[in-house]
Length: 167
Image 1 (spheres, rainbow, N blue to C red):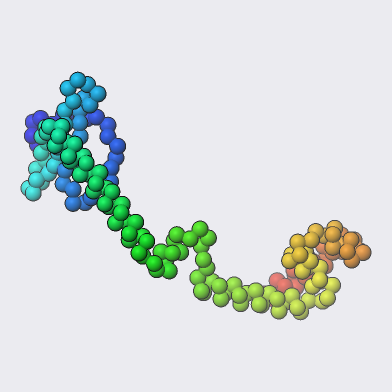
Image 2: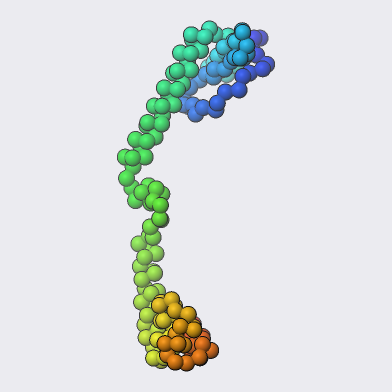
């Protein structure tokens, strides 16, 4: 490595770099009366070199890096927008869509549940449907049917037990 490698490097914002970018630029003493600008790179043999450069070259390389980042971001946006596969659209969705297999499975389970509910006695079926699908409380159902809350809860619990046996 060259002997003029600085020891106190000014902090710089972390930048995304192209994998083809072989160099790094940095400064020392940026906020002093004598700032210094450096270029660091590895040559084809893997030897690390660090050399002081003038401000104009530093500014040109800095602008090149910024333009390179802008180009990489533009390419990424292009790929993202042009990639219109089901998988990429699903990744971007706010609400994840079910797969076809999941949708079919849920549909079959719902149909089986409805068939099982249809096998229940009228009172149990009515109270179960009001409680779970109508979002009524035990008290509200009891008031509608003119019975006690305990009787409604008992009917719903028995209905759930029968459904568990069926499944």
